Length: 300
Image 1 (tube, helix red, strand yellow):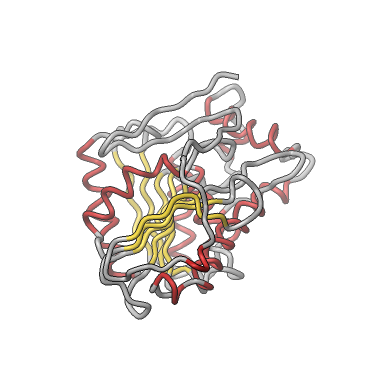
Image 2 (tube, helix red, strand yellow):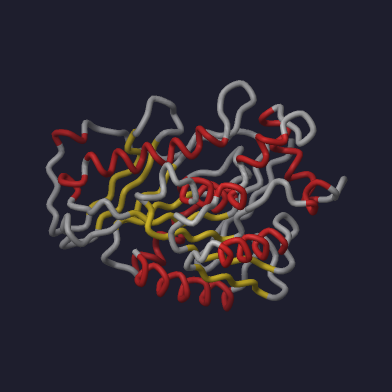
């Protein structure tokens, strides 16, 4: 099938619609981190740190100068790619921007296992997020970071960030969630009743990848929907969407906003007029970065 991709440049959000598996092109190899000596007064960058045995279970770590275990918090970045592709390198422009606006935060940009009918489900993806967090907690003295984490995800990564962070099994570790155009509800009639549309094509990818359909396994789609997982233990959440999104209809974010209000969860919700799923203009992106920075500083 054809690979559909759009490349992020500075101030442009990258959303990958990949229908085949992709491999990381990073050249760095992982070393034994247990014997590594790190100067906490200097910036630190490490690519492809392994947190599991699978080739996709790697992340990149960026640590700020003068960090301490009492004050340095970590923002985890989760890439998009329709759960079937994409790579942590796709988030590099976000890393560059966040390092400018939030210079005292540590960043972890992660890869995760793709959806696979034979092996992996959404549960495996959220388990991968948890494995990264557990790795960082176990090594927080070495890295001199706190056990306070936030999640920032784009598209499929936004969905996974919410699915993980809204789950009360996990969310005591998460202090803030930011979703940029992340799907929230696979049971949305706008997905189920739009046969032949781009939206329905996205939905069909999940069916092809997992072997599940709303007819033969509705619980799978419900339990994989952040809006059906969230409860009153959810952390502060900020949402960014476009009202001309061909893949994530506005009902997705509006319905979640209503649910968060009902649960009395601190949240902010923004819909940008005329904005589609991937080609975000500079003005809107500058606004996203500004609001995101303020929200993270206030809650993480």
